[in-house]
Image (cartoon, rainbow, N blue to C red; front, side):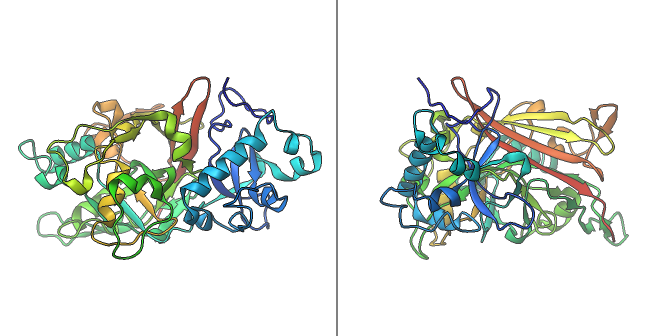
Length: 420
């Protein structure tokens, strides 16, 4: 028999007792941010649980980590504390445990209807790194911009390529994104174009949320890297393809990326994702020793993207992919990030890179789906090659278990016109 909660959880809910993702919320306008976990249609307020003395394990009973405005202090405690918290919460929420179930006052205080809450960023993001670790996306971009003879450069197969992103413009799902302005490559002898981006795009990604991190100068072993990853979120790494294409040589993305990155509000822990572990990819050539895992692990997470065109009531599916298409695993990404001595800190984000599948209907960006604007998509009677003002982009992600679903909620954002 599987776990069962006394809290009613619909069969199609993304938040059963097997999940319990962490987030930060306000129960009503004007309230201070609180840490919670999702269960069914409710958010369990962990500050209430902590104040009631119900986190009574050796690692958490004297901690104030759940009386904070973000999860960073909890993340810093590491995997033993995370496991203790998960065991405590699953016990409290189970249908066999009376402590919370039978205490009407405590139950009403601790369980907040999710529809009434305002979700916030779950962590204070100090640093954000975006990887480029999906072979299908790398191949497609190479075919478009370098040709079929050499679509992927040789170094891509030797190390997880990445760039340092902008943490200050990471926003939570539901936040509007203003269309960025910047330069585009000139035509003929004309000066470069300057104005609102004409090629706004999404990138279907996930991001690993860093836990304890490491001291400056002390790398993390690839086989210990998972102990430094708390969990995963959905991530839309919005991209202005025209700005990016003109500026990226020789140092890589800048204004084409830094205007906004959207993440889902719920962090699904690696413990909740453990039943959905799958084999990592065959890597050729074999990775160097510092990247060689004893067990190469990916996660079978179904991903989908919808676009709701401006003025439309309905959204339309544009692609389906899966996180298992990652070439460089999250453990390899983290180990590579620290191999030079770089220190990671609690709450840092590591973007996976665009998660494209091998077929046309599984590509993770409009750049690929429309082949750089040459093949328009049909969406409910309108066409799109890139995102237009007023369009909303929605990501979803879930894992299908035996009679339950572990989900991430949604990661959404609407593009607003540039006011300048």
